View (cartoon, helix red, strand yellow):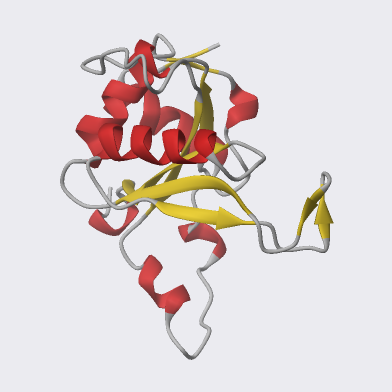
Length: 166
């Protein structure tokens, strides 16, 4: 197998939506900082009125992790869902997402009474060497044979992470 066909983690995105600005949003931000140890960005509504919330209001928090600690973090996050994913959680580009109902299910994270019980979404973006070509200014595309299929992503998750796809 060519080294250009190896699949790797590009990034892990943790997302929490509160649906409203205020104290819950600050708790979500603090929780994501505890889990990831990185900078957290507040997300805003984009369209005119989203679910009764005015445009430009902060309604969620997210953080993105890249680099060396991503695989370790991903194994901890998958442990919270008992290393089980459904085939429907993989998209056509080979990326996958899952939700964690309560953050206390993540190993190493203690319950905090000031935060309470909250859940989060985890989105994992996979890539192969050479994917940077698509982000260049010329707007090049990734060839069909170089894209990651859902089947390849499922096989990679089974082999690399010990995930059971049910």
